Image: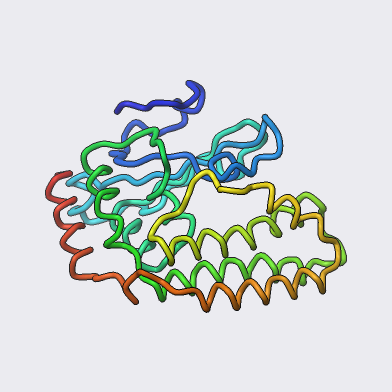
Length: 239
């Protein structure tokens, strides 16, 4: 398993028994939103079950987390089994869809290449609108629930994520792509300076209306028949 562009101490955290087909950097470092040189490193990846795991009596975990809640300058990994990964893509999951648009992968084998070449099959307008807006709403709701005692750093992070999700989701709907790193990360640092909760909520509501009204080039839903054929092809190739 060839791993490129990663610190040696991080490579040692990756389980050698996983059949990894995709691995890429996510989080603030990929987005261009890291606020310090010692920010943590968030990696997301895809693996395939081995034959005995896929057909055996006891199915192993479909999601594997390593070094969860990593500290400064440490690495965190989340791996989804390919079947679970494709299901999450069909649901419009933002963190999963971002992996499809990473400019450089740490690991990408033939199966990973097959997934990336067929990423357009995984995109559907309705789930993307619901998921990206839903995740953005969760960020603003956190601020409303915790407005009396928010840790400033955490509050700023939620503000950045809220408006970044709208922008990434709209770009995906309108173009079928997400630009990584972000085109204008400074925009989100300016938004996080807003102190007044009412102003933030109004900006959120306005941005939500714009997001819901934007025109999409994507089909309403991904074609599950074709995605299932892709999964079968991946299974055949991996086994």
